[in-house]
Length: 554
Image 1 (cartoon, rainbow, N blue to C red):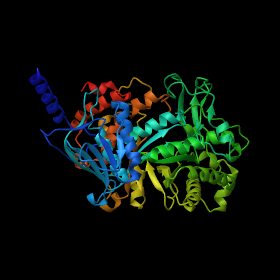
Image 2: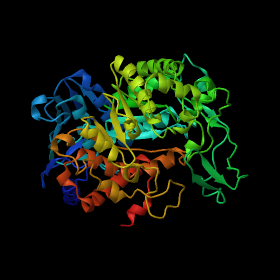
Image 3: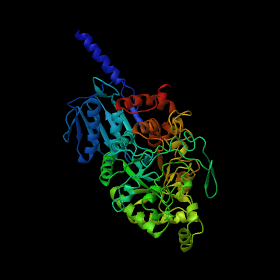
């Protein structure tokens, strides 16, 4: 009987040691030690940190082990003889920023990093070496990993204006980014459909601007509004039939984050080495702001309301007046925002500003004459430059969508290119940092398949297209290519009303994006990625994450 038990244990040990390595994103280098015993994590395993600044990283690993394997490890500064996981800060291990080396044997696991962030990324690889289901033993195979990120900016966006998501889910979202070694969270906090951040100087922004009285039913025009057509004209959008009524559900929707909640989320992200970039939209996409403070619009006597529909938003006057009153208001808003977010970057939008409303405004035309501006595009540039000068005076840098190139790019601005790659290419050629997020590849609110059952934006963003996307355009020479800071996925929430659908739209495209941004370009291999993805799906099952089961068919 003892011999049978012994043989059974040997077979289990062999199976564990032969465990496949399925890390996403793919490390720069990895080598397994076939036949060698794995490291076994048990209740006596200790986490060793000499540097107390690594406590957040140790806590992250400990919390994961406790949540999914009922193991809570002791954290110590004293290194035992064996059975420990050690975190070591060592800038000499690599020339790369945020690099890490991971060495696992049957005696211990060591993660050495050039930074605390590098060690944290090593922990994410450790997590992906752990079992993906119930197991009698929690093991890590014998392995050596040498790894570092390809791009300095690895971002993911979430729109909370169209649909609001509470603090608990925002934290969960940040954890998803951490698991994939992402380091920037672009938080889209304001838009036509809701103002989501408390500004103490202007309480009506949340009292009025954070709430709308309904949301469009179906796509516009489309499902639920099949008979409505629109035609874009030079100064308007013509809707037919003339008596068309856009259908809305009449359900009040809204919410906002208090400043204390913002601080809580910022601290949570910082412990995961993620920088949050807040976005305060201007000069357009401002109907929620104008509903609260209509005097800042180009039609101050107009009764603005928080938008209930989306689509062709230049049908609506959602543009701020480029006046001193408006600039002072925005400066006061950004002063409170910048005090909450330690990020060196503030996103100020700058997209889809219809010039019609400035053209029709006597005040706007007066501002143009006073400043020698010949076109409304130059007025947009004047607006962005005014705000950039203020943001720069506070030691921060602005990021804007590619429309901020119109009329001349602000001196220090970072361009986020969403209308294809043209804006990013133009910015890089002007020696400005660019973040690539072309809609056809990087907008995860688009369907994942050619025929998508759920309500999504048109034109699918296929998993293979995301994976095969190259952020550095071939048009750029080697010197210009250095200005491609990285890339970002965007998740707009017009048709995303709950956390489960956020997850569904995010996974597994976030996996593909993470590999584009982290792994060496030459290591990208889509069939191999698909194989590793199957193990990742098992992990998502363990974590209770919703994803498309259609990917399991292949």
